[in-house]
Length: 306
Image (cartoon, rainbow, N blue to C red; front, side, top):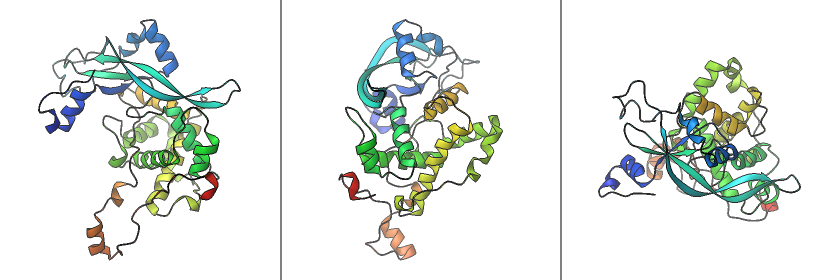
């Protein structure tokens, strides 16, 4: 389904647009999404979804026209959370069909994602939430969560879990290094939450405890605290669904946003720590061998280290 045009690589945004449709999110879980799509009823959920590029490329239409569902789909692999025959949460591999929407004005195409499948992520949001929540408990290491607490055909590596906590923490702190293209900034989400729910104004004053063995830098501590505060939001909003991240994503989309949550995995530290080592040594006289970030160890049995 991807198309590459000559010269597109000179413009990153144009390259993204030409290589693959831009992801948007609707407030449905994948099970409901797949059922409605098979019945031809999914287009009714796009009737209030407007083009994310409005009013820049769609300024000729006011009010903006809703997106239209096309007859095209794309298939992608997703690792989702399901109950096995014993009622245990298990990570299973699925090939999911994602519908494509189109703006009738600017003709731009979009991948229409359910709220529990994030853009640019193989693992679904419930798998990410379960792993991060287990690690937030404070008594399990990255390896213990990945090796002993998650079950299924392909569970994430402990390094992947580390990347999730780094990226999710940086994203929730409002650092652009933690964001992915077209995601809703965390600062906007927090502002919306505080406007709509008065109890959210006390979120930053709630003390959270992080196991001191979890971090070796102030930046890592701040990102782990941010992950834990994100988990607290579901409790403060009295969300009945145990998958609180999914419900938060549905809320965000329900407020009129075409895109929802989205965070980067492949970062090792926040932007403030991404400083050229030569400049750091000249400014702060930091020795060459001193670590500037939190390194992660190679794969080893859970009991080897925390």
